[in-house]
Amino acid sequence: MIVLFTVGLILAAPNLLIGQNATGTQSTVLQTPLNISIDKTYTKDSDSFQMIIVTLYNQSAVTSIKNIELNIGQGTFFYGKQNLNELFPGQSQVIVFERIPNTAKDLLLFISYEFSSKPNSLAKSLELSNAAKQPIVWTTLAPELISGLLSLLGVVVGAALLHWFTSRRERIRSQNEWNKMLFEKNEGAYRAFLAGWNESTSAILLQNQFETLKATSFVPVTLIDSYKDTHVILSTPQTTPEQKQEACKALRIAFDRFIAQPWSNLI
Image 1 (spheres, one colour):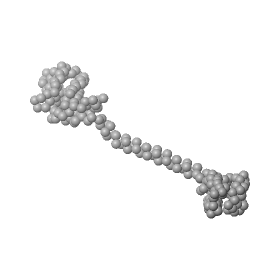
Image 2 (tube, rainbow, N blue to C red):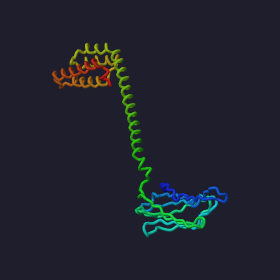
Image 3 (spheres, one colour):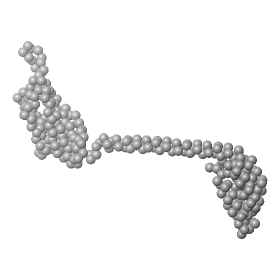
Image 4 (tube, helix red, strand yellow):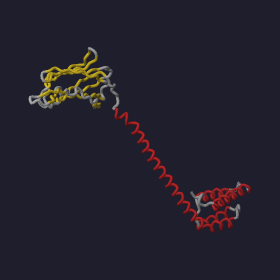
C-alpha cells in the first residue's frame, strides 16, 4: 500500500517576455512554460526509504521542452539522475525517484532543460519527513474510533442492564401481587388452622389441622418445610417436652411472619 503526501510545489513559474511586434503593439511571449509538482510517498512495507514523484507539464501550446535532466541530492552526492528527451506541448510526464533514505536531509531537486533552443536550470529544496510505520490516517483516527466504540459499548451495556433490572422488578411486582391475592383469599383458613392447632405438642392434632389447611388453601413451600420439621420433632419419642414446645413456638412464629407479610415470604 502506498500512502501519498502531496507537497504541492509549483516550480519554475513561467517567465514572460514583453516586447513590440511588427505592428508596433505590445505583445507577450511565454518563455519557460515548465510546470513542476512534487509528491512524496512511502510504502507500508518500507521502513527505510521514501519515493519522490516529480510531475512535469509543458504549458506551451506550440513549443516542446527538450533535454530535460533531473537530479536529487545533497551537497555533491546524488541519489540518481533521470532524463527526458522531449516534453511535447500540452504533455505531462511523471518521473519517479525511488529509495530515497528517510534520514536524508537538505535535499535539492536540480532540473535543467532547453526551451526555444535556450538552456534553463533551477534548483528547489525538499523537506522529507521520516516515514511512519503505521498509516497517518489510522494514528489520527484511532483514538476517536476507540472512544466512539467504548461509548457505543457503554450505551449498549447500560440499555441491557436497564432492561434486565426493569424486567426483574416487574416480575417481582407481579409475583408479589399474585401471592398477596392468594393469601387474602385464604386468610380465614390460616387463622382457623392456628386456632385449631393452638400450639399443641400433639403430632396427630398438628397433622390433621395442617392437612385441612392444605386441602382448602395455598400453602407456600417455606411453611410446608417448617411444618415437616416440627412434625418430626413432635413424633419422635426421645424428644423432651421442652424441645416439642420450642418446635411448636418456632412453627407459630413462621406462620405469624407469613400472615404479617405474606408477599415478602413468597418470593
